[in-house]
Image (cartoon, rainbow, N blue to C red; front, top):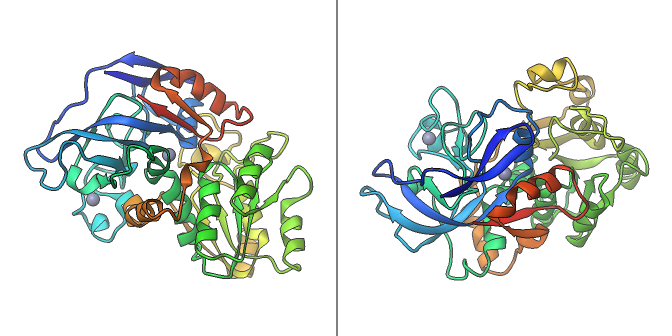
Length: 377
Ligand code: ZN
Ligand code: ZN
């Protein structure tokens, strides 16, 4: 089968690799029809993780079931399914509590597994023609009859939309609250979208890329451009000096100022400064314990200079971590099916798998208009 393979820093290519196949009676084999390039794929692409060469990337996958293992009872060939980027067993201590992003079974010695990702287990990704889905009955989200026509919306259930939603859950966003989202990449846009769906009174989105800010505005958010003035000052001004009720950090450790200088704690500390006393912050931007190409001494070991003094003085709370996709994807799917939500609005490019390498390059260079790339193998 054809698949996108990581070959080293900024080197990926579509190659022929052995077909994915059923390996265990609980597996499901999916013919991938839609698979996204994620901002977090760029951490690997840029050589900022320890991902092994030869890995097939791709953790945001949707397709049609081709074959099921002998122990699979719920999923049938022909079903349209979207796969959470987390691979989970469904029966371990964490899965039982709904914390499927931290499954203790699928990646022994580590809490959490995923397709095509550094440190997340031996699983090949879905930027390929075929994908093996372990524990298929648990991990496949079945899609309604309009799935084939609305793949652009439903594929956002694999990661991006649940991840953005998770930021609002970690911050306990409630109706009527004001929310600042830091980062208008796909996850930040989905956090803003989710906050609006939850009834936030005002959603501010902070980013210095105008094409992304325009998308934020299109879903009703107030754009805040750090290139114009200090974003914390802008947010304090907009809230009468009080600060916003809640903040979502959707940037992570590769945060940088408008001049491009990397400052890992930039968005995190801006969130601390911009929320009101006793406010809450949800952190879904990626932070890693080791960075092989760090921009400062602390970042090499996953550390940042965090404004703990202000955080403590204001009595703030913070939740963090990768999203437990299965906690939300069923409900978010039903919002799409009912016509309430169309998360596919952020897709800028739909391309064949053969164009994946050039798509990585454009997306990595943040070329104007390349907000979200969807590949069709
Ligand atoms: Zn992703
Ligand atoms: Zn588990």
